[in-house]
Image (cartoon, rainbow, N blue to C red):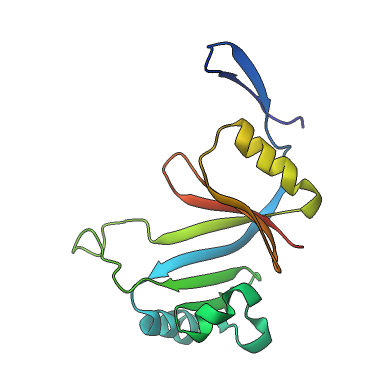
Length: 161
């Protein structure tokens, strides 16, 4: 299947063809990061109640070790291997006192890509004028770029080193 082709109007109102990523370029969800108000209660819920494995010692990503040590982040492994990161936000307030009313509490969704295709993905985001939050960044755990979807939800495309 060929990559999707989108025709966009430029600032001069002349059509401009933009090629998207090929199907199967993105490999899957790398990790899920949630903001939580009460880290102790959340660790008890995800680890104690749901039985997820909390990462400890050498399992903790190097880039998060200081935050984990400070109690600001906790990491869990889901049964499929996906990592769930909890980011403590103690001033996080629900916009409605009715807990059944939905609101976005997620920090960002990270999508894994092959290292050889990372630069192509960055170029596609830029070509589509997707709002970039920050990046590309390089870390010991890999490269990433953070950007927003049309609703303002933060996403990341990242690859291993």
